[in-house]
Amino acid sequence: MRYGLRCMSCGAEFSPDEVVYTCEFCGDLLDVWYNYQSLNPDSLIQGWRMKPFGVWRYRELLPIRSRQVVSLGEGGTKLRRCDRLISWAGAKNLFVKYEGENPTGSFKDRGMTVGVTKALELGAKKVICASTGNTSASLAAYAAKAGIECIVLVPAGKIALGKLAQAIAYGAKVVQVEGNFDEALKLAIELSKKGELAYLLNSVNPFRLEGQKTLAYEVFEQLGMRAPDAVVVPVGNAGNISAIWKGFSELARIGLTDETPRMYGVQASGAAPIAHAFKEGLEEVRFVENPETVATAIRIGAPVNWKKAIRAIKESGGWAIDVTDSGIIEAQKSLARMEGMLVEPASAASLAGVRKLVQEGYIDRDEEVVCVATGHGLKDPNTIIEWYEKPLQAAANLEEVRKLIE
Ligand code: F0G
Image 1 (cartoon, rainbow, N blue to C red):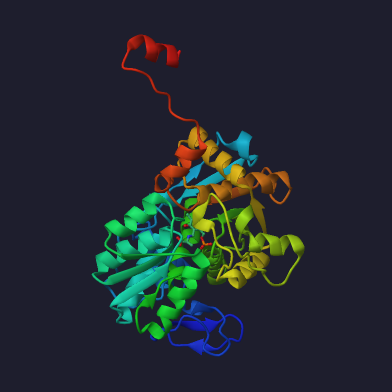
Image 2: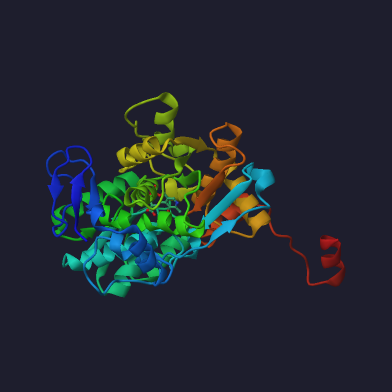
């Protein structure tokens, strides 16, 4: 199928076969477009059913020409119904899409399988990203599989231990930048201009987001070829919510559904420029200079995709809210203790968001809600050790242990 790049503001078009991340005329973000009219919905679905459940099942809607793709088996994650959580979250038809099941433990793998395949198509020998942790872990793994060099810039001391360990183990060159994520991203963008030094795989790269939109297709199939009423997503750099909305709106455009979900973005209170814009009714987002939250994955003050996120939320009829750190930890604990699902704090933000959205009347109790749990809980063990009950300790003595557990 034909595809290309188009600026979301001025409509300028760019070749998908050149290194270009943003509009060369107005500097705004780019979208990938397809020749949707050439797709027949019935044969599209028949084709899907013959392929394994995962990102590459939806190949017709991915901007890749190569037959050989860089894959670790990403996507195809479970959509778990959470009945025990009803009393806590308030939504009676609640599903959690558990992205921790991806090869490196987060949704980023959906984007990186496409992004790194694209990097090879463009002839890149090196890839780079700035990251709060998951992007770097994922890019490092896919670069390893592709046999190319990987550089990651992370905010020093502010990424979860598991993620740092992953990037190191997969062999990336890890640079801890003495600053926050927003500063690290500026450096990565500067270092990757025109792709000379390295190809940039942050979510400003529209090809990466194409991989991430497949979550929408999967949810649609998992619900029996239906879209849910609402999808709740944690928001940091704001790429994922935009990608998921693109997935659902494409399904409607192709003629596979008449219904699309309302998209809700959830940010941590200390890093909530988008939620703030909705609350205050602003047209533009005012960046937060010193973002702070226990959910380090979304500790972002200047979300690069804010315009796309606002477009997604408004077009879908949704909203954005913020949740406190203690609300995030409570949601994480509830999901772990009532459903046996351990997610990292940023992922729990979406669940804390569901509860608040129901309480505040944005989501009706009877509606079907999909909450996106973006990353695995084992990535950030330190937060659990710090915020939760301490384990008991006893001498190796029967009486003492019995006393403690009775
Ligand atoms: N949840 C997790 C676990 C994340 O790692 C991220 C982003 C998000 C949610 C937010 O997604 O940025 O598309 O709005 N992590 C990036 C990183 C920034 O570097 O790993 P977003």
